[in-house]
Length: 446
Ligand code: HAM
Figure 1 (tube, rainbow, N blue to C red):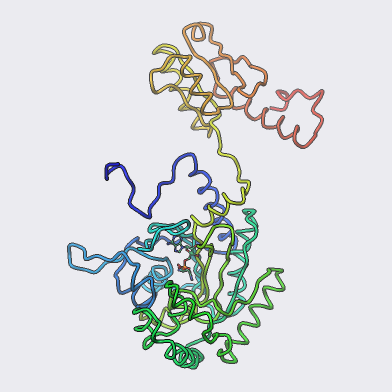
Figure 2 (figure 1 turned 120 degrees about the vertical axis):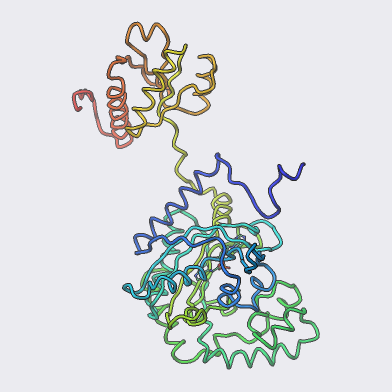
């Protein structure tokens, strides 16, 4: 296939027959986050490269191997965001949001870019829904954050995700842990990949999430961070667990989770599925108490998570999770002749103003072809307007689901059709709720 008609490797299109599902899922996540006090933040898709090398960490796979970095025409080194946390923290510092009441809770829906080997659930352009809670050190915030992700999955009806939590301590306990890791990996030096040899001296913890099969095999028997955390970090972790227990949120402590980004401290967590292949982590996050300082700001203990939209949609597909059906248009106005099409356009415009979804012929088709098209759209009603309808001043509203047809005057059609829709909705609710409507003339109610 010609290059121009093929999307770039690791990117994908979201087509109209699927996009409504993503929209529903994304809107649900934003709405739930808003109940927890999160407000949307939008940051640029590209930032100074240094933001990520300092924030995410220059010994991480993301920074060392996966970033889309280029010089712009002004000679600045620019990077397409590989994740959303660094940008959110940059905006928080730049705009003085630390002067606002804390914590500042922000949410985002963004595209992210990582030059990874594409496979199911792993793309080079992917999308994250994320939240960041900036400016609180209290363990209650960790548990509340986790409960937000939990609430999202249960609200959407997604099942079988395991919540795994761990604590990776603070810089003080990290020192001891690094020493233990260093001496363990030093003894395995001969088998480590080149990147990990470099990490051994600079940041041995990063060897733990190296994707090379040999390094990950060696990493399995490495000392576990939970055995090295200090009293304060341990107490913090205990309170997080106590809150999760109180909220009835099931979890397992997985001492091997260290996360792939350098900014994490203390609590880290992942929601993992076994149903979508090797890339099973649907959501990951944790605390990053030192990030603000790393970027030149004042100490701002913070935490957050991001959820991969494509992985979530894969899971929804794998589980056949029922999502609301796509909304169908209410009305199709078929028209015969120019005067009728002009009238259809006029009626559609005023009905749309009332929030009713209407389509009419914008392709110059025959009435037969228009009706076929309307059928494919799955509209609830159709009307046909031709010379005889214009002359008689009456149209027939046909119920495409097999209900009775109703005759209406063209004069005041907008109002008549609107009350017809309301009456049908009431009748439908009465039907599903088992309310006896016999003897009630719905038209009398309006
Ligand atoms: P992350 O674990 O790198 O964390 O990514 C979060 C989620 O994004 C993953 O769990 C996964 O669902 C999705 N994801 C990551 N890479 C890919 C990819 N190549 N293709 C498809 N989906 C992917 C972060 O990005 C942190 N910023 C999360 C965070 C927010 N921590 C604190 N606040």
